[in-house]
Image (tube, rainbow, N blue to C red; front, top):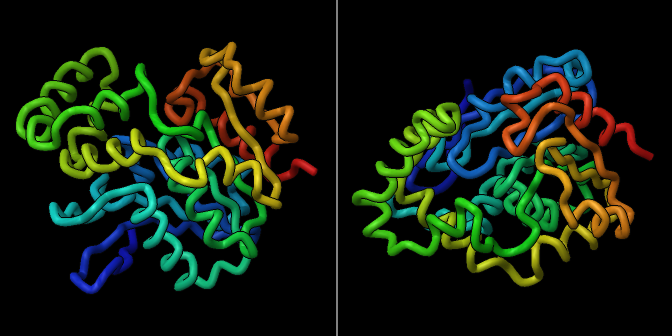
Length: 256
């Protein structure tokens, strides 16, 4: 694992950088997750093995630093990732992003349009979070209440029904989860959906088969966005069908 100094206070983002001669793929994880946990098996699949694969843990998640005084908004994550890809000298790269990580990815893509070869999103946040989503639930609590009790309750409640997510969520900063969730509820201007539609690079959106039907499938196809479906998987497709997800990512890369 490698580390990248994010700011003047020496906060560090940690990441895996797996070698490959083909266009680099930057993997951005979702809420309460970590690239180091979610994507090694996906990245190891035959379809992606020739690509350079960069698996990050966003600040506040996984093995990265978790400063309490950080803003943790969607835009702030995109800002340091922009510096990161510039420092890595990624002249052309692919972004794969999941769930709320998709909002971060779209803000990043908007900042480096000339470097984007492809953006591939799996069940990503395109609009501000609404009722029924975890980010809406977390983001509508007072931060103090969430940090000082509700966060632990959420981890405990999910330890039996969704143990994989509970395990990654448990090592996240509760402050970071609260703040990025509030950012998701607030949304952005332009919206993440508007950014996606305006990008000139190749674009793919991935659904898990178990998440369908979804009205957005028709809407995205209407905007000429390639749609792929991962069989035998729902929202947590990286864990449920890593081979199928890798195949869908590869189809997005090859989509003409």
